[in-house]
Amino acid sequence: MRRKETIRMFKPSRKVYMIILCCTVFVVFRYIVHLNFSQLSNFHFLNVINHLAPAYGKIGYIATTTENKIIDQQIAEIMTRINHTIPQKDNMYFNETTSAMKSTAIILNYKPNYCVGDILIFQVEMFNYLGKRKTYGGDFLRARMISQNPGAAACGRIEDFNNGTYNIYFTLFWEGQVQISIRLLHASEGVSLLWKTRSMGYNYMDYTGKFLNKTQEVHTKCGMYLYSQQEKCTYLEKKYNEVFYCIKLPAVPCEAFISLSNQYTTFTYLSNENRTLFTAIHGVEIPKQVERIDVLKCPKTPMTVTSKCQIGTSLPFPSGYFMKGQWFPSHCNLSSYEPLLNVTKCLAGKMIYLMGDSTLRQWIEYFPKVLKNLRFFNNHVSGWHRTHVAYDLENNIFIQWKKHGHPFVAKIYFSVKEHAYMANEIDRLAGGSNTIIVLTIGQHFRPYPLPHFIKRLFAIRSALESLFLRSPDTKVVIKSENNRDYGLDVERFSDFHGYIQYLLVKDIFSGLNVGVIDAWDMSIAVDSQTGHPPEFVVMNQINLFLSYIC
Image (cartoon, rainbow, N blue to C red):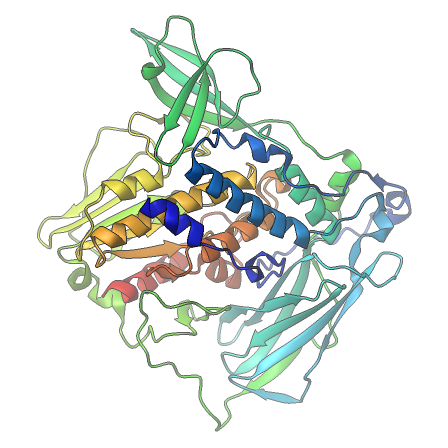
């Protein structure tokens, strides 16, 4: 009953679902100078108009209990709110879509010099290829400010007025000459297509399950949802109603399921004309009135934060900036406490459970560089996706990384013998003052209908609420999703999908006593163009993590 009451009380905030991109990748693309726009203008984009996710009713279980129905209602409410922020356009021609080169960016509060701590405001007006001003928003923009000297970078916060006008706010964290970058990643019409295609179904991925038939390995089709009338093995997690399926093999018990792999299909929901929106015009810089500004260190109030980083603090956006390879949070003082220099003392006697994808596995791979006595336990399982266990017997430190449950995207086979969903893993922990949990989730969900992801977040939140009731002194840190390779299969893995998930994580976990590491902010600020951020970014994530628990 307690979990049911908690779910009833939770109400997602409206502001989180506005399609306002606060910052993102600064990706250098070749501008396509040979594109024949007169030909493209004849392309007719059919059926762009969006409807509430048609795959919503196929998220893997039948809501028979009151509690399940409450969760379904909340998911439907969230989906409706997001859907209302997506441009509802139909029968669009290419020359009616957003053109970065035709659009303009001017400074609203221009002056010859600015002071550290000032807010620089750009106003962006979007136009289409015909030179006509756009009257609706939803464009997927990315904004950064950078300085080669002193080697600094940060994100800008973007506000969408839903009428073709955007304001971009840059907090001037450092002195020197600052360069501004504002890029169009997806036109609003492309955003509309991505939203619709994500909601269509489960055709982007094929899973192959490996079963043991006595001494012989046999294979069958598996997935989150199977378009088949054949008999199925149903792997149902009853508490949180998570489910996975495999086609039943004759004379092979469902319990003989040993491993799983998956591969991208060639399936696409986009026509050749629609794909033009993602291959011809993306990553283009929007012309600006002023490319660079000068920032001075004025004798007014300095931007010095003295408070220590603490769990339970709500992060602003941007949440900080990079300077010479070091991350400086804007809401707390990190440099004075030098967490990495005292990492052994900080983690002594602690049990650390890292749960999530390979961006969190990067942490356990980095720890031996700062914990010299840390050793890995050989669990006799091969592959990067295996559970990693490390220990320091001298200082009584235990660290474990384990991948999250289905869906997990990996082309090579990985064991499902110890498969568990993140909420179940949390339920199994006693918790306490020496227990630390770090969670991250998102990247592997991008090719699937969004209700799956929302449902998973509700399950994790419920498990955390229970954990805090039995062991309120347990420390929990949420590492947000980061951006990934820009050119990697936009239909399946676009950062637009990741950005919505990033907002959902922030909103659904709000109000819990957890620390937050904004990996989205960090990875985009430094122009990380890979799903696995470079080592110095991982180091700074760990440094911030240590500041929360030390």
